[in-house]
Image (tube, rainbow, N blue to C red):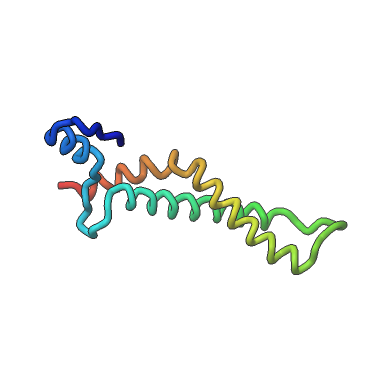
Length: 106
């Protein structure tokens, strides 16, 4: 937001009002709730999907790292899920969040 020094008080106030987001009953903003919703939906869905995919693939005959690979594979999977959530979970979570919000509004 770029506020000009010569701008009137009413113009500055209207700019600030546009930047505010409404508070929900729990005290958090709608954006915070939406981010938490997106993170939960994305990590749950992508985490379950990646876990199921890993179960269908057996261990390779060669170049398997044993227990160490299994431990680090889980950490890598967690990073993959976080990246997938950040990049594409909103396409699924946004419509779900809108439906969730419709039920909460009077």
